[in-house]
Image 1: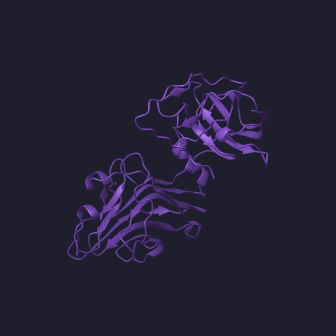
Image 2: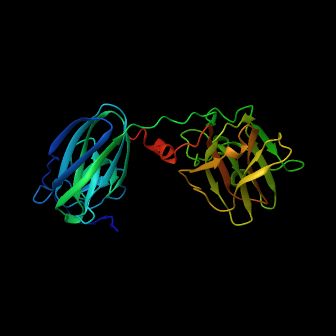
Image 3: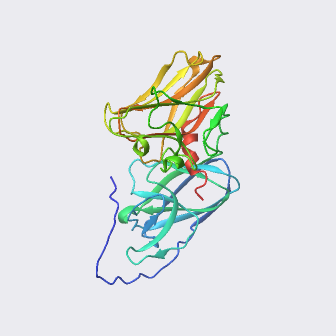
Length: 338
């Protein structure tokens, strides 16, 4: 396990080291989809960058020497690293858009990375442009390396038959119900009305049932948000992102239900009585709808409880004619990394 180094000195004057930008060892040219095997040895090379910031979070101490590859993408690509050596010096892989190193007065020389892979894994999805891949030794390591640089064109996004992001509010063809006789303290609304951030994962508004903002101790609530009717194709998948802040077991509950008879009967698909990404970035939920193929369905998001509790947020509600790749959906957050 790697330990992230965070050094902080108080009252000590730290002299800036001599700065030197990273240098390119090999230019791979313009790359398209495919696999490139890269081997080499960092022994005895210069160490011009001590840590990389960016998606890595707190810096890793990369005090070993580094070797830098340059390449150009003519179109958007998904980039992956696969290390081939089972026993090797501990090299890390950082994708950069600049060779410039800086000094912040606390650490040593640094560079802002766009993506990071320890040994093997996904760097992310990146637009056309020129990039630099630094192979750097963790904590002073140096020696031989052998890895594959794998580039793939991003898959076509799923064809959504139903899609709602609530950025224009809750549509008029969606149904909002107050299930408390005589009326409860609140119903579904958008998060801006509730005065709360969108924790469900979208970049605008979301649907929000918010007991924390509008509930009261000892006052029950029960509200439903229901999609319009839609025909379910073969191999369909229903999906959404959500944030659910649960006060405690048995206090408040979030449900997702489906009906195929216009709401006469409902079948439970999901019940939450525990936290699910309550402060973001939102949990992606995928539900197989293949068993409802050929039927007309509606989905209900229901939130109910007995007093002053927290909230249930929903965003990016969609239906695809075939199961969407979780990898593709996860890459959505990386699409605009540059």
